[in-house]
Length: 311
Length: 158
Image (cartoon, rainbow over all chains, first blue to last red; front, side, top):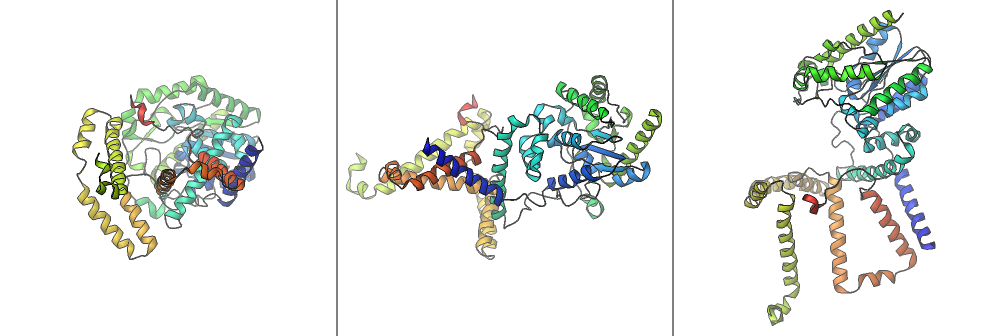
């Protein structure tokens, strides 16, 4: 018993050393999550909070929305693999009069892990702000997994730092946490970088239905309404070729199911879903500069119509 | 009977090394059939085992030669770039795998020379405790129990 005590104590000290000696990567994409949390905490009402995966981060011009609607805008989009964990964070900072526009990706409706968040990405997200452990679905059950993964990724990252010539840049490409503007929009693909050519896969969008997802979304909607906030749903950006491969019937079925299983109004008209291939940057979810403008204008028009009709 | 000859006794370490490498090679060859998706894939791999090495070696030599000019780090970088032609695995995984291989090889040699476990148990308690703690941390850091990442066990192909 005494032996086990000393072994576990020494092991805990070693782990503690690793955790304190290896800070998060300052340019990790998730570094931007701190900006978004600060915006949620400090931005005064009235506010529009747009949340989802990278389709939101890449595809919204928040400044334009702010100018057209006269409300402060927070782009809380980051990465599809975080699932709805950012929504749980938003719950803490919701205020009366907030408008939350949810724009999840089809991948999130595939299975529970895709919806609630992939553990290895949640571990990175929590690493930047430890209190976020409480925003994860089934926090107590997930804790051993999240912290073990965090330990593994810290060691792995530090090793690669040494092996790639004292640099964290390996594999980062342009996905850097310091390429977000003050609204939380990702801008690393705009301006001088917009001319890069990427081959985009003509894959099928993974349209699925996950009952637990609709239950959660409706619960979130009820929670927000109780706080005096409004929740709306906006379709992710759809690339024309991928739309055709997926099929209009499958796409419509998803949104009809969303409308029947939740009371969250869907802003996007189903005939507006698909955008030309030329509007996409490097994946079937990421809009380039032109696509970002078109989608934002569409969102502004739909939101204005909804708010006018609501009154 | 081969090992009882005078020459064989003198060359015993070399023969041991050849035996080791032969066994290793045969096991690796057998694993082709475990890991291949189909018999055709396995047949393709076995009939192309020695294909493409010329180009790979040429590229690797070029990269390493260029790296050497930049010093020790350039040489290391060149080695990793060469290995990158064989695998997409990150450098940290390659380094950890090599470290693991070196450790186990060292333990094999120690066990061959004497009773390594008994020698370890005779060490001071704080050394043993450090080793046990390091083992616990290594299992956590390199294991997959809590990560949800599936690792295909080689015999479960069926």
